[in-house]
Image (cartoon, rainbow, N blue to C red):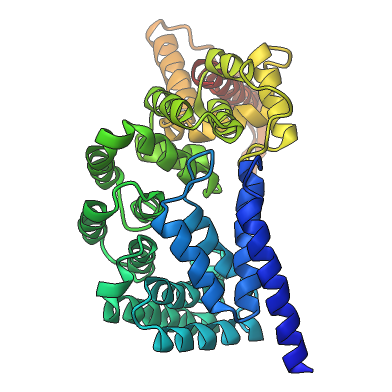
Length: 427
């Protein structure tokens, strides 16, 4: 029964391989991505590492890209996670690890074999880690997480000469450095070496940029240092395209994209110019959709309206923050049909660089008002009321009963005005 099941899976895998070669003609970017990921998962589940190697070698040797400019090789390797699934204890991961290690032992001269073995291990580590905050990860998951990261690095380092013939080797190594808490300086230094050999392989840039975010092991200064390096290495071949690709990749992989882009000093105008270069080289609807989504996220109304006029047909959803509902909100924002939305107000204020100072505005306004009133001698005397005091009968005590309520109302009013003002200026 097991033999029959394996044969069926291999037949399905071979059929998928044929489709993977044929589907790209006329397919959209998202269809291509789905096709390659599914192809990888089908081959790996069937244990057909040789066919996976054949396909990876073809994509690597041909430097094949999609119509939007994405490296097909990176899409294929992204299917590894799908073959294992999101349960770290699933038997599928054990089969993948055993099969990848065995294939490498039998084919030590294959770059794909090295990368695949390391990729399986680090993807399994990522499943153990999960996407929650560190404090929410079960303590029992940390040991297998680090064990798999270390095992991935051992594979990469022990087969460096062979494995580094595949650019994905460098992307995985940067990822492993980040997961092992390497310093930002070390990551920049390694990225410099990687870009000497494969300056145009975008996944290396994506991994480096994510590792250099302030929430990991980087900073705004280190990010700017890396971007300068990336542009220097790629400008002769692709102009400033890498800037736009990196920023969009950071945004679509972040749960707070606008805040993180602000933290690293990202600017709309350089991004827009970069993506226009991408569109000239790869005039694909997906790229126009990315430019449109980012114009809504942190661009200007005028740019958003101009970009949407270039979209023919339904706009593809290119990121989690680019749902059909969000697109409708962006259209309303740009056209002025619904200029004030509380959700947009709070989002803009939250990501405003000086947002922490906004609550100070009401306090300053109130303090200044009180100061000038006292200087002018116009402070009204509080009303006198009587209160009974034990052993003394009733005695007149000045009590300003309206002070607390009046000050609260003033603070609320000034605060609302300050928030709305910030939104109008920075929306």
